[in-house]
Structure formats: structure tokens, C-alpha cells
Image (cartoon, rainbow, N blue to C red):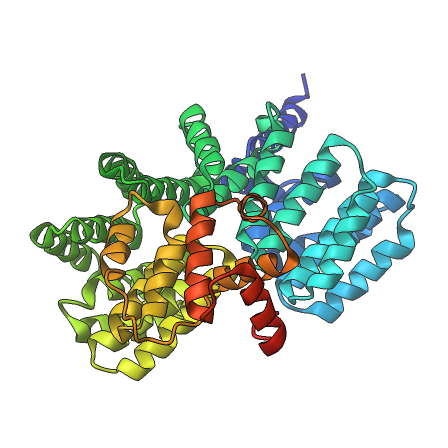
Length: 506
């Protein structure tokens, strides 16, 4: 019939489009690359799809692909799309001046009346600014992106908003934005697969960082409804399952925690990643230690060490390298020198800069008798967790500082941050440490107490303070008692007068 090659070409092109739409990105990339060398005129929309896939894992490939096809681009819309993708690729390569030049060409060609392209352009530029930590510019681009009121445009804008909050380490706002994003996608998962899987993974990780039962419920339902995830997003599913395991542990449900960790371990096996498998064993070791099961903890730790013995660390991903600070923390009580070696390796691999790694480094310093350095690192980690809104990690770090310093201030901060996690072993440890407090210690106000003190000075009632803070009335009353004790007063009027006189609380 003479139509064989055309039919074959149409079939593989359809396959690429379907794979991309259903978030099977590796499959789309493989099929495209297999046929690209044989085809003389690949449709531009397929070239753009392939370039978008490359932005996530190989931006240099996106640049080569787009420049090779540039001579074929005729219409203004395709020119704008080409310049936007080139700008995004160069931004990923940290070549910001070149990226800005391409974005400027896109801006000149852009018809502002075509709202979908205008919105996409604003989102791309915002992501470029996030990479350079220019958050104010990113927010301005976000506001511009809102011109596209189509569902696709609103989804892109909400995803961008979550990314900006993540760059600001505002975890609560990021979680709220991700929940709105999942609501917007709704039943259109197959049309926005990549965004959906990524959002569920990110929200899952935040679920254990924040007192956010709604987030944990949404993630749990999503993982149950879509049990089969594309290969490109299995690492996101791993992170979400692990986070839910910690949600259960922090809620006092040990059986539920181990159930999620069992599923996480099976997924790590399918990913053929020794560091991820070791991560699950180390989580189990921590939970066993919290339960007082030291023999069980030692067995899990030995299994993790055996898995990590032959790892080629320079070839691992950033996600896999996070096992090193975790290993150091679990190893510190029994093998301080081994823990120090794990932290040193993490530093060489640039995996020891986040607050979790800083806290682990502080614990390792303490275990090795370097008390001053340990306390300094733990204090830095505490303030980072507090800024991010990760209350249980802040409470856990304050608990370590209470043990290291013996100061009542850290005992109070541990109790304050772990208040939401009253069923957890961490809260029980903090509660036991808090009795009795050293009556002679000169206690200063904790950050929460300073907020309560300010509200008292504003004239707010106990009920109004509880509503504004999202805390119970009894919790606020306890804060007020401690404030009175720390400030040496017996009434609200005396407190307001002392604050006005000393200017202690702002």
C-alpha cells in the first residue's frame, strides 16, 4: 500500500504523547530517542515534549535538541515556546545571563493577549528566579501567571506557589498550597500525571513535618487509590510512605508505623537501592530504640551497615545520600567514631547542610565528647526547624539540648513543640525530663510565650489567644502561668506594666 513508514511513524508519535501524558517520562524519552535519529521532520510539539522531559534530568540535552530544531520554527507561538524552554534549560544549568537573554526574546515575541502562553512564560521565569534565590522576583512572576484562568493555568500557578513556599522553607504554606493543587487536579490525574505524583510525594514528606492530619489523610488515600506509580515517580512514593510511617509513630501507633515501613521496604527493594533499603532499617532501629528494644535496634543497625558497605557513593542520588546523617544519628550512642565517619562522608558528598544533617552532626559531636560544638550545632538545627514549622523535629532537638545542658529552658521548649504529639515517645521523654524544673534557674521566655505575652499586652483574652494560636484554652493558661513566673509578676496588669517598663517583649 505504500503507507508502512507513515503508519509506523504515527504509531510511535502517539506512543510518545501518551507516555508523556500519563507521566511515564522515561518511556517517552526512550521511544523518542530511538526514532529521532531516523526521522527527518519530527513534529515540533514532540520536540517540545522531549525538551520538557530533559529539563528534569538532562537540561544540556534539552538545549542541544532545541537548538538543532530552531531553524524549523516559523510561527511566533512556536518561537516563544522555544525561547521559554531554552531559558528554562540554561537556568537549570545555572547560566543565568544566557537564560535571561532567551526569556527576553520570548517577552518581545509574546502576545500578552494569549493568556495561556503569557502564564507559562511567567511560571518559567519564576522557576529561574527560585534557582537563584530571588524570591521577591519569583513572587512577582507568580502574580503575573494568574492571568491564565484556565484550569491548566491555575494548576501551573498553584504548583509554582508551592515551589516558592518550599524555597522559603514555609512548610505550612507549602502543604496548604499542595492540597489546593491536588484539589484542582481532582479527577484529571491522567491529564496532569507528573504534577499529581510529584505533589503527592511532596505533601507526603510534609505530612510528618507538620501537625497536619488532613495532609496525611489525603496522601494515604492517594497512595491507596493509585497503588501503581510510573517508574519515574517511585522515589516520590517511597518518600511519602516513609513519611506516613513517621506520622503513625508520632501519633503513638507503632503497629501502623511498621506496616508503612514494611511497604516502604518492599518499594526500596524494587528500586534496587541499597541506601534506600538501609534507610528503612535505620527508621526501624530508631523506633526500636524509642521503645527500649536495644537488641532489636542493634539488629536493624547491623543490617543497614551491611547494606551500605559496598555502596558507590559518588554515583548515588541526593535522596539516597540522606541516609548518611540518619546512620550517624543511630550509630552515635554505640559507635561514636563510626558516626563521625558517616558525617564526614556526608559532608564530602554535600549531603550534610540541611537542618536534619546539622542536628545529626550535633549529636555525633556530643557522643565524641565535643560538647561545645555539639550544643552549637543542635541550637542551629533547632532554630532552623522552628522557622520551618517542623515542631516535632524542633522538640526532638530541644530534648537533646536539655540532656546536653540540663537547662530548663530546653525542657520547656521540648514540651511546647511536642504538645501536638502527646502520644509519642518523644513527648513522654520530654514530660519526664520536665519534672521537676530547677526553681533557681533564671528562665527566659520561649518564642511561643513571647507571642502569648504580646497578645496579653494587646488586651486579648485567654479564649482569643487560644483561637489565634490554634491551641487549647488550658494550654494558653499554662503558658500564662509560666510567663508570670518568668517575669516575676502575678497579674496581667503587672505584666503589661513590666513589659512597658523594660521593653523586654516586642
